[in-house]
Image (cartoon, rainbow, N blue to C red; front, side, top):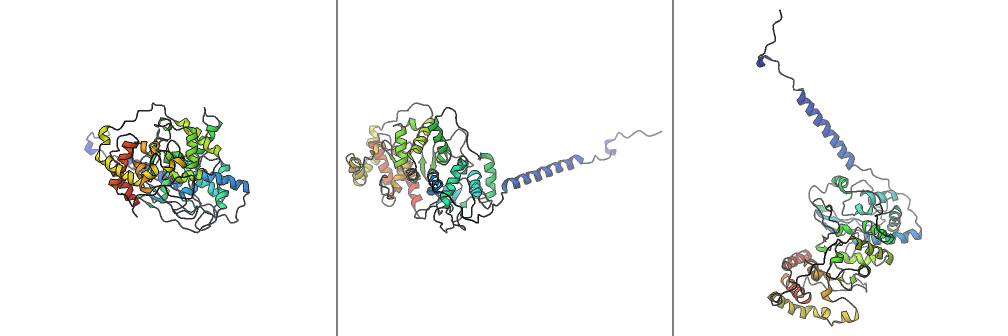
Length: 440
């Protein structure tokens, strides 16, 4: 007779740890698949150099000049005092400094060796000719929406500029963002290549404006807030942003301003750098208007028509008025004396600038009516440099003449006595930051 099996657990043979070995194998396979996916995602092939100089007809080059102006390419790719399109301009981002590269047709330091295919890949996918990832400070997430004919025209124009041999300084980015392949994961989240479909309910002019604003113009890139990863949060497009210390106002509240923007005023502003009811373009927007002044008026009318379709519904809130105590404030009284000595020659009611030049009165300035003193303070600190364009106003920079307290006093005076609004509570802190940024 066979003895019955023992029921004593201690006498039972140990169970093999097969389940442990299986889980480790699964995890190992998943890790290898993840690594393979990451490598595939990050790797991009290098495209061959272009050996023969391409040829273009005059009409395509002229069309390219229009596209490049609409895309503001010279604005970012030209350093102060530098050669056009030769790069070197430092772009300040929340993640560090990115230096714009040389896009002249120099073969060694520019894009002279780039083929049409390489140029198209850069604009549609953010990949350089040699295969490295481009940072989204280059707005390829917008340029990807451009028609191929416009990309070809821009290529023709840039490849027929004067080549300049100039190497851009290195970027200064926080760790680990200097490792470019990481941008591939950002692209996976936010890049949607290809031309956008027409939007229902827009007429032909507004559709054209949509193509310009959402494509080469990349307006939302500056006029929207950025999230932790440097992308626009959902539902916040055109809500306003900050660029190089300047406030880029919300483009979806133009009709809710104290003086609502009209299409005619938008066209005037984009083509001349100032609007009769809102003041002058300044900071990063000033060179943009210089570029837009060279494009056909029909493009600007289309941009204005589309921007006015973005307006959020709402009521124009009554702006709070300055109280008697505001007018009697010590800072306001100090600012009044400064204004009389420094500003009244140009900004007084009867100043020749208004009589002859037709410039808007200070009370109409959008910077003065804004909720933040940022743009008013920056304009005092940096001024409006003279660049030889007669249509654009000039104003000297006061960063070396006025200190933060004096700028805050001037801000208090004009805000209360000229705009009729309560003084900004944070003007002095904003002035200190602006002056610190101006130091070498």
